[in-house]
Figure 1 (tube, each protein chain N blue to C red):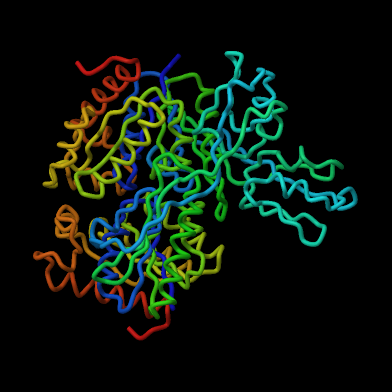
Figure 2: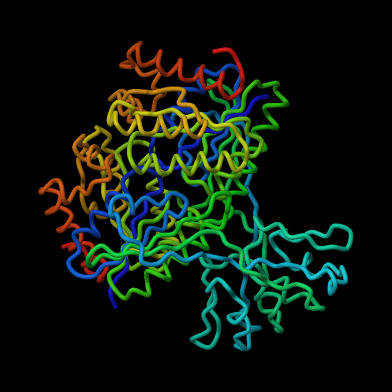
Length: 286
Length: 295
């Protein structure tokens, strides 16, 4: 089976998207890029796909049939998220707190509780040559990012090709949902105290899940050596160092691809992708 | 007490660097670091710990294999693909599990139970600018929104008890659950953006979110001179959306050097008076715009 390589970071704005879109662009053969940053998906701004498919993403949300409800409160008692309260003898559901687990509908003795699909975002997919981009966009005001992320992952996995995952920032549930089944995890960081602090958290998260990791240092050369020292001491492979270069920032700002505009980077990203594929296949450092 | 939350949508636009700078300009402030899964404000504000407490939220699943008869009902009811019974007895994936308890309730053998989960730690500290509430969510944990709500709540409590005039919250990236939690009680959103297509795209979503919750928003364009055409585009978008651009801060290598040194930019030796004045002006305009105070 073709491997899945995830890209995450801890701190936001370190260069996850830059890495993800440029790696996807140099892939030789079919590749699927899954933009799992469903709160702020940006990969499409660099790849401009024609969306072939846009589908609503819904989660099951309970609703109450007042005629059948006896006000017994079993739905409230079973909910671990506090998403059901009783107003008098009438259950009320807080959609923001509901995880869609189905516990209340199962607990209801009279069949008064049923589920209807409630929209919380959309999943899109489109092609650019051999590259398939799948992304998820959570709707404004919604909170179920991990659910949307899982839907993006399922859609990407169904493509049966090499999958690159652009994870959201942070180290909590949406990130875990994005990287959970990956064969290899790339952590992108920058040489600053913020970058180091958040890299350590991301390394800890990866360790708990049990993922193999390597680090890409972006904006290298800012004069803070502790990230490199930390990786060396923690025995984490430094896969690539991308220099702090205003040319890169300019290409990024306008939504361009480094590998198309600067020849040196086409070579570097091609070599990096080859290395990642070897790591995902279980080959250690040479 | 007025409350301002600093957001950005896209990460890495300079939220935390500017929050620290604004904190040093604000008078009588209480700080809340609401980016609990990558909390960095303490790296600049150099806090002295006043108190800390474990943060309990939600549950974790405990499985007693001795009692299990391998019936597989737990896998059938789980909607989160957290149970795998392909080897006969179930195994549970703690990272996929949302601790809804459906498997616990369905298990006829009492082999499963939920216990309280400790998912992080909340801290109250003193900084030279005022008290700060910050937190650490355990890596990989759930409930970041609840921890953010707790941080925000505690900061408001301290602010009221100590008679503070302003609560300044450094928000998380994105627009989801933790961001929404960081907005509860906010009088205004100060969005920090930069001139790139990605930042513009994500800023639009932050403005949508602020509008959704009917909270006034103002925008700071950081590194504004790096791509002047995009800065102009951001400005016209903000005008259309009634989220005024209240400051344009030029790219300055001092930001990077101050960050590398772990220092507030306004206290960094190479911060030139012109840059410091731009930041000061931006802050006072933000206060005037979002809190109706005189600039």
